Picture 1 (spheres, rainbow, N blue to C red):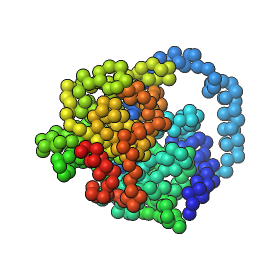
Picture 2: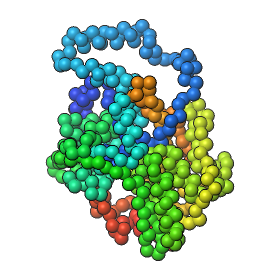
Picture 3: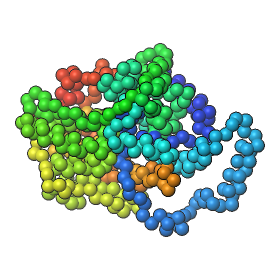
Picture 4: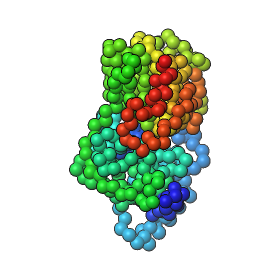
Length: 428
């Protein structure tokens, strides 16, 4: 089955699936049970919002023309629409539509329940199938990045690269939000979800029944490799990740580590404050990156007027004097790119792998008065050197594509992992 046919099928379902407005949960980035997180989310609210409303130009939702047209549409729906109407869904679709009109797939509306589930991602555990999923920037398809080891997704047979076509009765379309699809994949422990996928090389679509379970996101794993090389794998950046990362660094140094490999492959990103805390632990407060405006600068965000919103800098008085190699790939997004970019700019070591995802914009998750929320793109971020990441990504110092035979494996042994071996070579 050709991939083009898959996309045609998805588009054919578009009008059937969308209703009054486009659909709306969570990297890089991030996951139906493993944790898709809000890439570079912050709690910062836009300043001078009242003043902005007063000077608003262009479309005016309160104008007579808009109200007249809305009333006209509603009249036809009330009189002619054949099927029963779910008033709650109808109301929520208006808010979805407000965000959809921005034409920014990172700016979305969350119902109260969706917002509460979004916040679960930061806690490190929730109920789902245990797979990280992502959205292809080119064709809009949603695919499995990686099932967690020993997860319901792995046990059912899902593999990296599987393109998700259907979740129970929901036929996916290419303009559906990743978070919306994740919301349908997740559910209570013990319940089943049926997932239909397209798998490269298979003549027919494949269907899997996955029994959901409680998923604990173990964001950091580490071990000592041969020749006293410490290996740290970071799955995503949530609340507990910095402490786990620091413990891993300290333990490996205590064991005599001479260098570190930090694996950010398939890491969809997460919280800015988490990645900043981790970089701060590695980098000297007085270090100066090439092109940086000040010592210890880790990240700078600017709004649409090119005004600086935030400068994130080193301040913990701690640093690690070890060579570092960072692994990235096309699924390494947002916070992962902040990390890899800082390693390059501060010349801590080499970045190895393939060019990263290229998400360099900042979303603020803003809770509304009724418990619902919006996620709104409010800024772009810049590396210490001043370079942009959005739609560019981090280009590795050493290009190394993962061997084709390994791309659909859930678990790759270190000795067969050609990208890891290349990273180790850079430390010689």
